[in-house]
Length: 274
Image 1: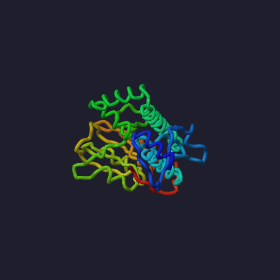
Image 2: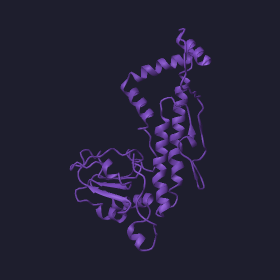
Image 3: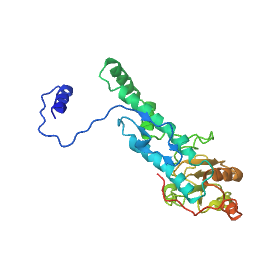
Image 4: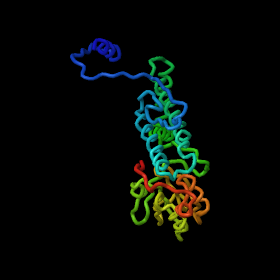
């Protein structure tokens, strides 16, 4: 308590006196990350995979992001229908996100130092936050909304959190994802993906209709963690491309399964989307 009181007096410039301390904790600016989030049957997430200064309170979002990314992949592996290498995508997708958060918190720690250099940077950051672009950038970094997984597509939606698409009948994407399956939203007038999507019926939920804002897409495939895995052309979504994307993330179709290509243990997931 004497140490805490001395620090408070020094920082505040007053003669404040502490009479009792009920809870106290300290933290440092340590920023560390494991080299891989998977080693055989051992999988790391959250604070076990990365630690950093709590400035900005980004640790919770990052840890939840790890768990949601891993959960459905682990479930698919346990049930036997995961495509080869699915679990390996966990480190590939989440490690860069963790590294980005560590760098961000390092920058936050650096500008809090009580020296003229840090104070000059603080002044510059305040000026930037005062602009529309600067505020947007800060929000996207702290919230994680600018995060994007590299899924091998140049489409701006692929690899990002899916917007909560609203269909004309009032259905929302968030409602469709509560079962923990992937979701195919087919915006095309002729429902061109219905037959293909039904081939993964136990793992991908299909919904169709016009969206209030389809963002220029004809269809989207959303993973159980809420990440857009594929986007189809606005006029005529390519069924072959859709089926390749579905196989890549959800394994063989029901038709292939019945033909003996794969023998999944059972359908469904036990983890929902963000």
